[in-house]
Image 1 (tube, rainbow, N blue to C red):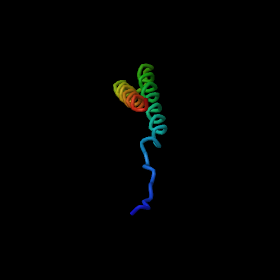
Image 2: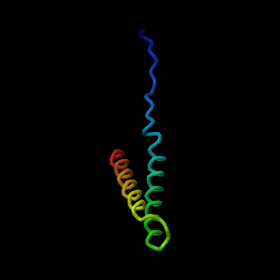
Image 3: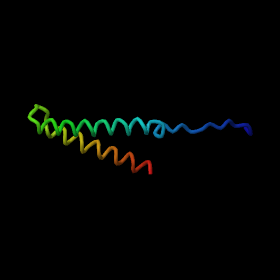
Length: 68
């Protein structure tokens, strides 16, 4: 038992950090565009845009805070 193989621990959270940040930013921009379109008279729902924008801002904020 003296010859034990050591393996690096896979950190999938660190591996997917960039893609999660990218998706969060895309959702934030999509929410802002939905809010903008709702003010220009289209049928885009204002509250859905606000909810997506706020939710994605919180998500990106938590993601960045965990990275620091």
